[in-house]
View 1: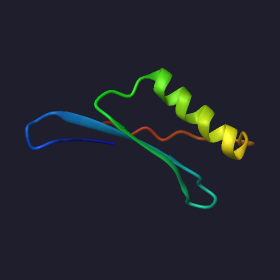
View 2 (view 1 turned 135 degrees about the vertical axis):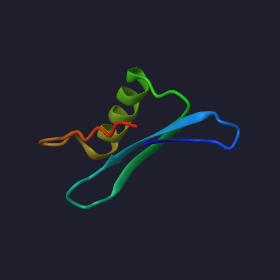
View 3 (view 1 turned 120 degrees about the vertical axis):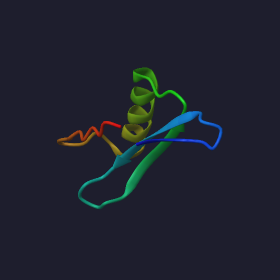
Length: 62
């Protein structure tokens, strides 16, 4: 998800949702969210909850 601040600066939000429980596992906000940041967040979640048996990705284009 992405949006812009009043001054025009853009920001993005990476939402990680458990599709079964509908629980939001992470909401990462930043002006730039690179692959290393995504990997770090997913590893953090996996440390707390274990690795999923399956996963899916939904990618919205703005």
